Image (cartoon, rainbow, N blue to C red; front, side):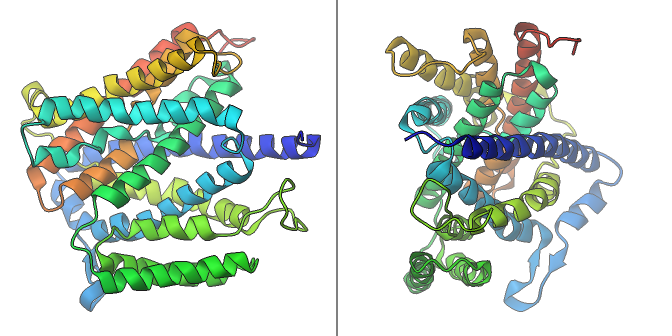
Length: 403
């Protein structure tokens, strides 16, 4: 059963709006990261550290700004990621098997190859191996921000494939965090969190479409997950997946223009894109580079991350796409050839937000390996962004009227 023209038109509008927001957000994210590096390497470096470590809250909730950003505001980011994943699975680009195969296989290969590259460099260092997942994730906002610099030369199929690979990539990263970065589980709090999630599932099952019960329970879930030893941001994922969504293609009544999921997604997207992620970049990317030499990037930990992102990502993504095409199971999107696919693979090596987040989880209270991880992520992301931009600028046909 084919979708009606109105549904297709609506889907195109949603994607166009998403791309504009993500592309602009990527440029803001880049600016925030650059500002953090400048601040951390300027005469105001001490003020930058004081700002990052500013205490907020009282008693047990008296934590630094850095903690609240990473454990609190990033839960909202993961909530938005979960909303986007659910929308794509229910009614978007991940709803069709034919559309699903290429990006999902590319995403899986783009996670496996960087992890293997990192492991090859660090397999004899147990501490460093905690960071094996750091080079596995693509930063969708950063990558689309770079792609936006090419303007109308970029085929729509490339934007769509990059976005869908990144969504699938985020889902894998969420699973990795849940499975490998939980610490000291508290079973009572975890049982309470499961109970709250089941209550949200009951509300969803009963077709409760008001958002406030889900959001209220989501805050409670965040507190319980935080206490349980599982990283608190996963509460955002669970909440997002349980927010009701419907469209014209399923059995739930579609009496209003937007589902509760779409309403919340549209409300959160600007705040996440232009406030939460730039603030996250600002408090996490401020690496003091005084005395840093090329040799510091060539030690196994940062080198493994850099090789994983800059080489492992494009080899995995492009290699998977070539295998699927050779087997006749998938085709490149319209307007893309092998050269364009290589450029897309390079952009997938931009691992900024999720990579820094996983590095923070892997090396909590370990300043040196965390600093080395940030160095590797920044170096690889800059290289991937510049190489991808220059390559695509050379191989993509120029738009009419110049570009």
